[in-house]
Image (cartoon, rainbow, N blue to C red; front, side, top):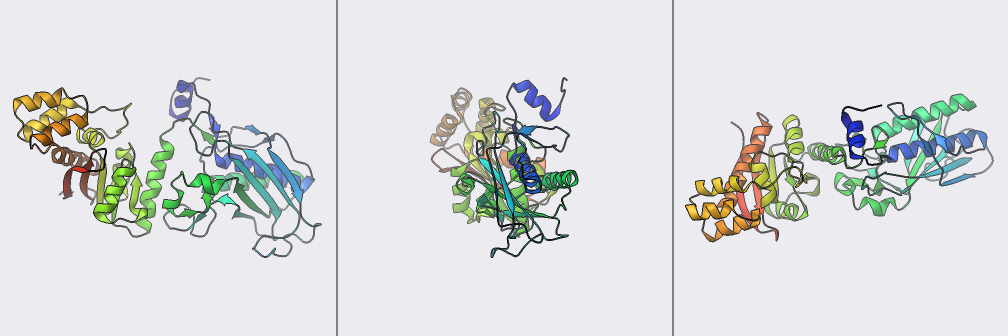
Length: 391
């Protein structure tokens, strides 16, 4: 079947291999573990149903039955809030396809135990899965970092297995990810207040390689966390160097920092709907010159530094004809800023002001004041625009 739009079209046109989310892997492991708890046998491969109806099969990487002989459902607490009694563990290795996912190859484990009658499905964070410690996420503080869609997938899997094999469907599911705490250091989790490990994520069960959606979603969650924490000033930064400058300039806490990367438009559009009092945009001069020229995606493959635009700004700033021509012919944005600084032309400030104007245009009537900081590659501030809001 030919796909004409959406994520499927992105995958089809790329020729890349899709993968599976951690949520899909956790669901597969849970399905196998609960089946074994009821029957004594692990299905391998195990087939699950994804939210859009696909039915992939997963091979098991590990399986284990354990625990004391069966007693009353739920048994006695084992001292850490986990019920005693028989349990089953199944594991699946995450295959992210051709996506550069830090969790590719991670071992996702589900340990299933019988829960108290009427308790339904209870989720627990095992080793390598984080716990929510800050408001603003789609989970309550104190909950395992297992997102709503994976939870629903696992609940539906438990109900299906229970109906097939005569189970009650009252279970405790502990999800763990081998080396998850170490892997999580390469993610947004610590900043978002998810501590101790990774999140179990996924809305479709399928990872589309090189999709921008995950990064943009993390920006939105960052805004949610900042707002929930009462932050009235956030910073969208293109990288770690500009982030350090924003912190040094404004003393912002970690949960007020948005890893904007190239997605300036994502930050601005989300703040338009969910405003805070002030937004600082901080980034390299070249990237912010793209924003100044009206680009909202700053990636080098999707927008380029417009030397003609910079030359026009330089002329507005008092550059003579020779300098204007030199800026227009410059090899890089960095060369343009060096030429102008040597001549006393404030090209950095002009770019910052133009970037601020673009941002305010996207924000429309949202009550957000915007300031901009441009830096060079060494982290030196080369231009700035003071806070301004739409009137």
